[in-house]
Length: 273
Image (cartoon, rainbow, N blue to C red; front, side, top):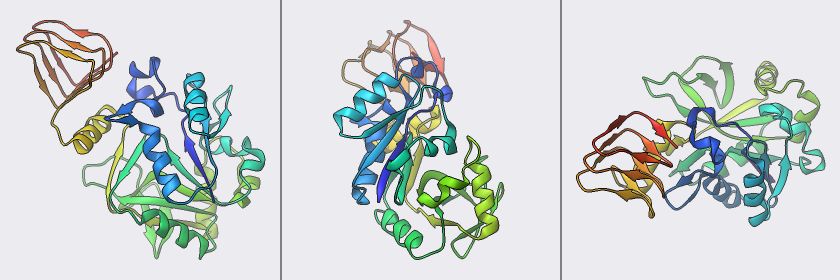
């Protein structure tokens, strides 16, 4: 089995941070987001691992080379299905794929169950899914006996981790992989494995904040090299190295990547870079 990290996205939900750094390389406490996915792939036994690059590609290329990854640069972004056609001989066996901004904790055996389910079935793709929170607006998925039966409604959602068989290459016709999912549902070849641990979509402000709280165990996280002046109040927020929160300022539900929150200023629900 091989592994792959999806890291070519534009990261628009985290602007303006992603004007400076690719979403997949944003730090989460002690390492970049993609390192969490890389750990999952290695633990699952992926013997060769690739990563794609488009937005701020030079940073992804440097990251990949430092970790002995196969880097596939996309001069034009190819999409969630289109990138597969660009992999050539790399995609010649089952491949475990993770989104560069999704992090998983707990349920340590989920990749082993995923591989076994895929191997012992007729599935060409097997998704890792979770139960949807009641308030969630993410796209739903319905399951029946480990097979996906409906895409667009249901009590589960896709986490961004999946295992793909190389036979799908001839079936990928569009930049998006969703039409292929629907085709495989009709053929009874789209499976699912349920993840029951803690999962975070760090491609959003709320997800990035929640992941920091979970990993650090702290209600706020101040990176080394950040400066917080006396009297500043920081609640459910992250201040990255180089960020400055002025005296008597309030920073609430926000991410400060670069720049200054001026003295006495209140910032709530924002991303600053």
